[in-house]
Length: 247
Image 1 (cartoon, helix red, strand yellow):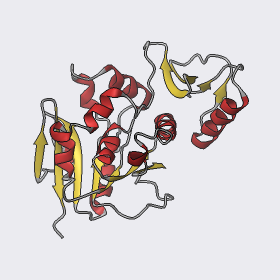
Image 2 (cartoon, one colour; image 1 turned 60 degrees about the horizontal axis):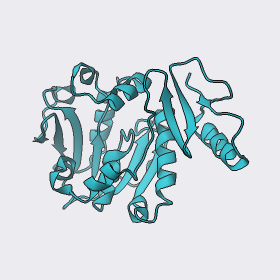
Image 3 (cartoon, one colour; image 1 turned 30 degrees about the vertical axis):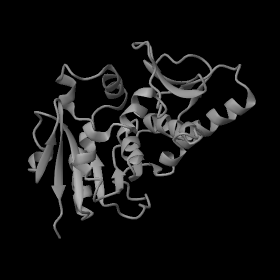
């Protein structure tokens, strides 16, 4: 089990915040460095995922220069074309992860609901959202981002109003074989594992009968559950398969 490792030198406000995050996502607190390979830490006023195997911790940072640059240059963003933001702006990101795709879509005007079911990733994502909401330069973007801890597969989850598009970017096992996988993705795969129920997730999305489902795949991977897409938007290393509901 992954713990939230904190030292006892934190002030009261920081301690209360960490206790809240711990309770919200069911992550136990440890005052001794855990023996596990991965653990959460409180670092530079942020929740971070640390590992004994990687020097750089993972944080959700919607304020990074790289991400903000992409919000101003959407001509090259294939996801914008795949979602068809000119027509649709109500989106569910059903596998939110670190939320970068959702943030980009929101920066281009979409209203995005993020679902994340892994407690560790959800804690990172929630913390990143809270910090970003205090940044005046992107507060308008953050107002279009809505976070739900859970999955569209959860029977006990009250789903919000159905969207126009569901976006899926599940962890697929074949990505581990790619030389192009970034260190951050490798890190996350070791923590989260693969989404072995991605077929069920895809079937659930289709059963909701919304106009459009977009699935992100590695470029040479087969279609999800070998169900042919209506069409695809392809990049150098990835592609977006688009499934349309004409009814």
